[in-house]
Length: 119
Image 1: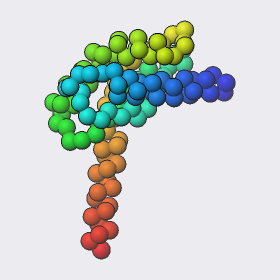
Image 2: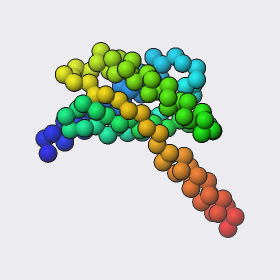
Image 3: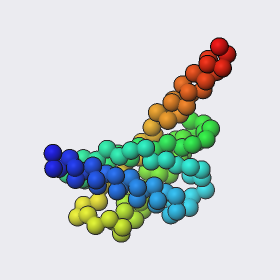
Image 4: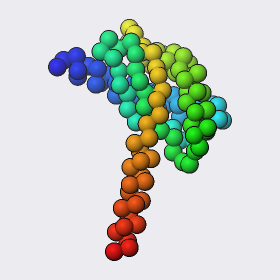
């Protein structure tokens, strides 16, 4: 129980700091737009973290793949930036994963809105 609370707190801080780093320190125009960090799945030993992200706006599959490659390529920079602002003995290795749950939720919302308005 105690470890879960610690991991949850660390996960929340990592999520917040990655969002700040993505917003203010990543200057690659190919990743332009709004990147939202939806969640972090961190290992119990804090050595590895899956970072679930989404990109707002209409993007193609090719653009999505390109943006993920750029984020994965910048993971070392993001990790070192995290090490500067977080006081952890181990800063986790980062893997960026696209999470389409937000876009799927928006699609369902629009379908429901159309159904309700047509009644």
